[in-house]
Length: 218
Image (cartoon, rainbow, N blue to C red; front, side, top):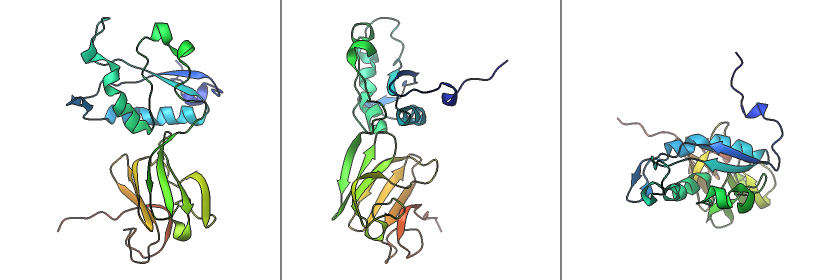
């Protein structure tokens, strides 16, 4: 008996629409997603397909509507939560048969990365990418752009040199240091570190994100 196929087995998906079955039965509170763990579980698959040039369409259900339209069990309720995790707006298709993938157009352009929630410091800017990465540009003195070195000025959004396997949910830019929170809840910082402001226990400038030293109780 053969094993399950993976994304490595499906061949070239450039420009193709890929339907991804995801679990979006998430807890809700006051009309908002209270726990996005299931949404974040789908992020690596969505990101890899997008990186390979695919147009990603997500298929799911919310609750158990049993074939009947029920506004309290509509996926429209979780769209904002999905958009927050992906880092860009998500289009909800209410009637797949009437206006689905053929008529509705792509949710993502092939290989497209959309930037959202930009934050600006005195001379550089960072934003979240729809592929789960953080993109920065501007003044790169002391490694402030976070791309692992490079020129003193970066004029286009460039993915920061994140550690392998680390994705970020939010980014904040200061005057000399930027920090991002990983999806696992750990902060990473980079930039000028003359006063130890990166928080890694050193005073060495950091041109790529490093984890902030954890504070342990006495």
